[in-house]
Image (cartoon, rainbow, N blue to C red):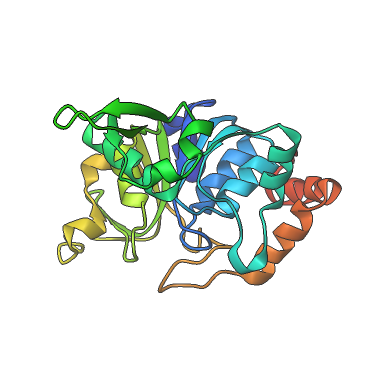
Length: 272
């Protein structure tokens, strides 16, 4: 594990055009310092994979015109409304959407982390049309024990995953200090993991954390120190979402001309 500036970490551990996973859930714990670095550097994203419920960490990359396709159950802003750039890109056909439900995404990441090529989906998926509209992720398989046919979902292994955690110690171990959502599964499935943290602590300071609330150093390629780096989303227990800043983004994202100005001001330009 190495402590790097965001620019160096993104340059070294994300290959342009590859699959990028971004953590966080809705308006909490989005790795915005790392996301903004991708926007500033104008790095294309071949496929964007999100948590079961994403917001600005996905919409901003799409607004900048960097994402070719997305695998995500939902992109939106909860009580603040829809995701303007995502919606516009989907309606125009500029963005390819791979449909997936929350449960299947979680199973796909679990399979990726376990080195399993696919995992049979629980009953109930047959009641939806999701597998039919996303044949890339879903196939019919036969249970070798019962002969029963059911849907299976392909494993997911993002090339790089960006996460936001609370602390990292000098040895490279990381603690979420929040509910991990699917972020820990993303880290297990990823080929490379870059974590932005609120603070650095001495080696051994995380020994009281439960194993499921941490990422061991061998899973973490780089740490970026970024206090407040999830804003305008919040970090549970440390700061709340900034509704004013989120509203300013949404107002700009709804209008392509205003969006160009917003991206130029905050990230060096770029628009869809």
